Length: 458
Image 1 (spheres, helix red, strand yellow):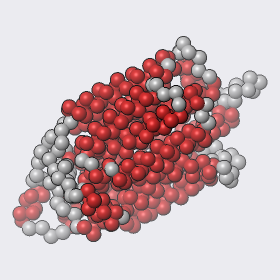
Image 2 (cartoon, helix red, strand yellow; image 1 turned 90 degrees about the vertical axis):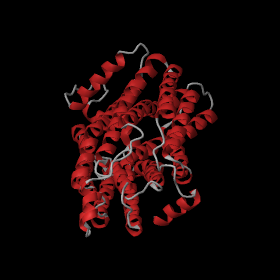
Image 3 (cartoon, helix red, strand yellow; image 1 turned 180 degrees about the horizontal axis):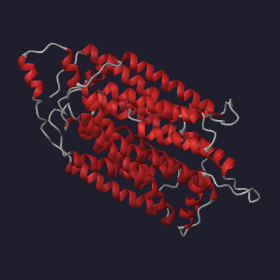
Image 4 (tube, one colour; image 1 turned 90 degrees about the horizontal axis):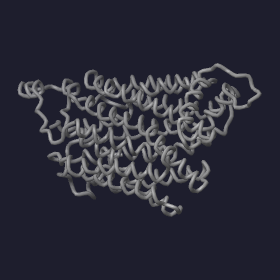
């Protein structure tokens, strides 16, 4: 069991990781609503659709030729308006797969050299990534930005490891929910702010330089804030800073073994399978709303904003009160309900009911799995174990959109979402029957007191 952290230190570290992660995620979400227009800008410049234009041999034209060959493999014709969406999906998958490679390495480095050192190194990579976006006047430079970002983005997993370092069994779930709340808040406001910034033109060669520049400012501000304010939290390093008796030194040399309840393989498998199906549904949702209701980008933005708002309310009010395993179980069952509804809905009311289920899923599952994984890891291996958990999840997030949309275009909406429901039913069975409650994870203070204490710490 981890040594208790001084309350004042815990309060300070919680504040730092909350505000720094919020800055990071708002910056990260700037680009999400810009992808269609951004990629269309590069296509018009490097691979125009105009039949009279001279053929180009750019990297983008090669990528689009492969995507068109992929489209041609389907029996159902896919309109050319999906070219940009397919390209955006391919870039999203690339980013996630690079994260799957990098996350375990970042986690192991944080176990060896410390959370603060690993996080600042990750921030250096993020600064380079956004700087490349600022100067990206062609697709090749933009692609380089995404590759560097995918390999260096370790903020979320390191924030999770830091939150685990400063939490005991009683406060673990509520602290993890705090990180989830950062996601919900950022995804509620970040995309809208990014879209507004993209309307302000400052550099003709890169119309999105304003949004990229503000994103860079936020990342640099976050880095400076972390450098000044974040102390080291890795227990094996912080213990050496204080005098220790012979008995304490002996205890440090021989860490108390963790009583395993759930295997990391099972937790990783649940994370992989869940995000495989969930990310496919996320990616396909704008296609479905366009085909079924004729939704524009603005209406899709409102729908996603609704999901983010509901998720943030749930994170602040419900998830932080729940034991992590119960949180996971509620989330996967809500996801199953969403799949069943999306296969059958014909009204906007039904769509928003499914979106409410999606918000519940977003607010619970990943937060709960992170907390469960932290209970199964000793203090000197948390970074690595949480990195591996994230890696499996990112692998699912990288493969899910491609596999799900393949089924969507090949067999149709009902078949795709019904097959997704079948997959999530399997995930639900694992969560309900396979995962067990770790000792200490339900021995929490009265919910009202726990929530009040967390709010005071911020």
